[in-house]
Image (tube, rainbow, N blue to C red; front, side, top):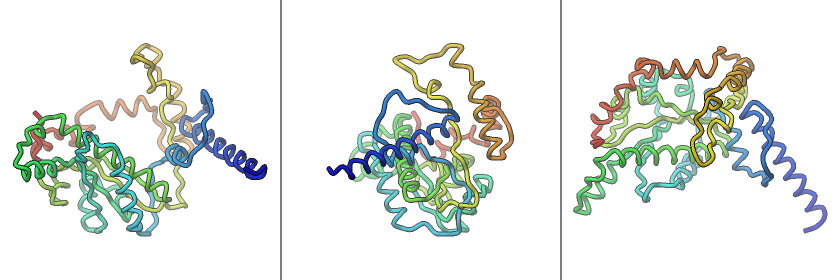
Length: 289
């Protein structure tokens, strides 16, 4: 390697490291000191820069981008290679509007040119077993249902990373679980297929910038050897302050994180009909033994 090439590589690594440091500071709302040094990568930068996008340009998502994202999704790990998930791409405005009614008529669903519904899918496995002349009693148990939900989540997150690396924005929509039976009917889902969540996809509107939302300090989620559950681990005052600062910058209502989550889990009404999810899942054909 020439001297010039070596200097260019060093400069590139420094720029990458500086960007990683900046992204980490935004992600935690404070300067972060890593315990060592590693080369900066585009993948790490994409992951750390993630933010939910709720405002989109009226520009369609290229079919190639969808195809690549689904290939990335299929590259995610899958328990025993069962691949117990599927996804429905919704672009029709009327169908999207009907699904949006279940989700509470969210602006990002209305604006997004592409809406993906990620499915926990045991139906395909049941059909395979039937065609093989085999029983499929193992699908009747909670483990198989959890496996399908986990597979769908892993696949979707891979797709999100792919979309963002292509300059597209995304936002997860958990509100489909407000009425999964209605969503299943709209999408003509067979038995044993559950809409786990939706995902809006589109080109972000550059006029509306959303900053990186700070997360809990790593010390709150990273445990060594055994789970740490002492009085210090229950103190979230510092994070409340960090999130308040973010809310002020984004012109959001000021509320402590501890108060927000307490409201979110306080009563069954706060779940927005999702307290009936167990019954809905059984209605959709899952046994859950």
